[in-house]
Length: 161
Image 1 (cartoon, rainbow, N blue to C red):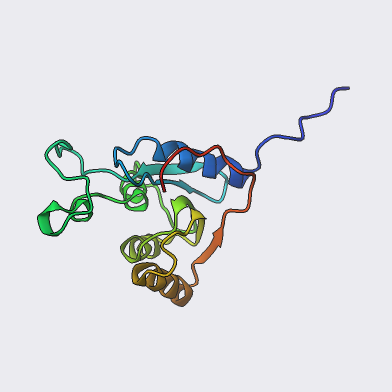
Image 2: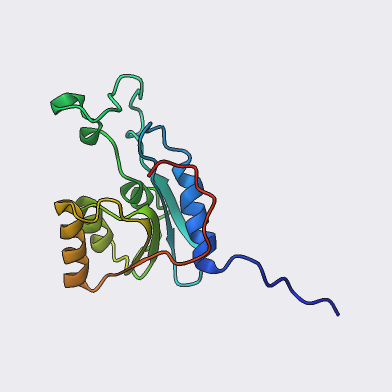
C-alpha cells in the first residue's frame, strides 16, 4: 500500500499562502498586503488585499507617500479591513483566525477585535516600532486576541511588504 505524502502544506502554510497570493492582487507599487480569514473548521471565510475602495478610479488617486491629499494613506483600504468587509452572506467571524502578510495597524486591529477574530498570524512586522503597531499589540493584549509570527515553511514571496 502506498503511503500518503508527508511534504504537503500544513494549515498555517496553506492559509498564509492564500494571504500571499491575495497580496499579489494589490496595485500598490510599494506595499502589497494580503489577508485570509479562516474559521475553526479550517474553512476560508474571506480574503482581502490592500486597494482602493470599490468604484474608485485608481488612476485618479495618488499611490505615493505624499502629504495631505496626495497621500495614498487617505484612500487605500487595508487587506484586513477588506477581508472583513468581503465576508459573504453574513458569515460570522467570531472566533476566526486571520492570516496577514503584514502585522495589522491600529485601525485594522480595532476592526479585527470588533468582529470577534481571536487570532492573528502575521508574516512580516516591519513597522513593529511604529506607534500604530504598538497600539495594535496593546489593543490585542487588552482584548485577549492572540498574535504570532508565522513560523511555517518559507514561502516564495515576490510581493513588496
